[in-house]
Picture 1 (spheres, rainbow, N blue to C red):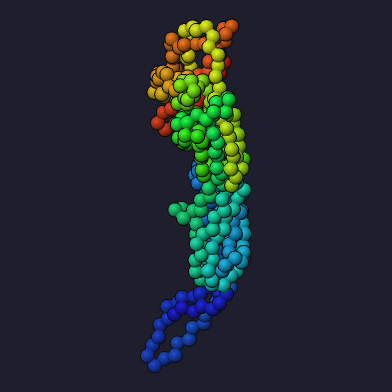
Picture 2: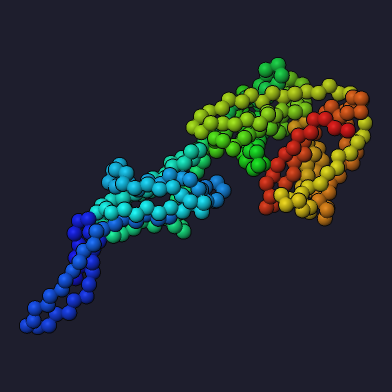
Length: 305
C-alpha cells in the first residue's frame, strides 16, 4: 500500500489481509521535504569550487532554497516542499552560470549531483583578435600566432591570414587570466626575412568581451658578430631537474637549434651567433621548453652577457 498527499512524504507499507476479516492500519504522513546535494568543480582544472552560489528552483523560476559550496565544493539544501519539478542553478563570479535539467521529485525525495553527476562550471570566456604587422604598419601574413597563458604555457595557436589578422575564441577570461601573444615563423614581405621579435606584454581580458591586440614586429640593428653559448637548467615545479626535456633556441621567430636536457636538467647551445654591442647581446633569442606530461612554455631573452 502506497499512501501519499501533497506536501507530505509518501509512505509505502506491506499489508496482510485475511479472508473475512477487516484489516485496520494507522498511517502517519510527515511533512514532506526536498533535498538537493552535490559538488561543484572547475571545468578547466577539475578542482573543487568553494563559495559558488547554489539555488534550488521549483517549477519555472521560483527560488525555494539557496546555499554556498564549502571548501570541498559540496553543498546541501533541505526544505519542506511538495512534489513538483525541481532544478538547481549554480553561479560564481568569473564563471558561466549552469542550470540542471528539471526533474520530477516526490515530496520526501532528493536531487543528487555527486560523483559523475557533479556540476561543472567553466570560466567565463572572451575573444582575442588582432593583427601582426611591422613597425611601419605593414601586415605580416601567414605566420603562426601562439597564445600564451600565464601559468599554463602555450594554450592555443592560430594561422595569421593574408591581412595579418588572427583570432582566438572561447578564451577563459577574468581575474587570474593573463595572456601574451608571440609570433612564430613571421616573415616581412618587403625584406623577405624573418623578423627578430614579435610579441606583446602580458594582458588581461574581461569575461564576455573582445580584446584587440596588435603584435608589432621589432628589428634589432646588427652589430659586430661573435660566437657565444646559451646554457641553462630545466626544473620541475618542485625544483627537481627534468631530464629529457626538449629545448629549442629560436631567433628571428624560427627554431635555429634544438637539444635535450641531461640527468641534471642541464642544456647547452654552443657556438651561438651573438650580435653584440659593448659586450651585451642585442639580438633577442627565445627558448621553448617542452616535455610530455609538462606544460610547453616559452621565455624571451632580449639582453644578456
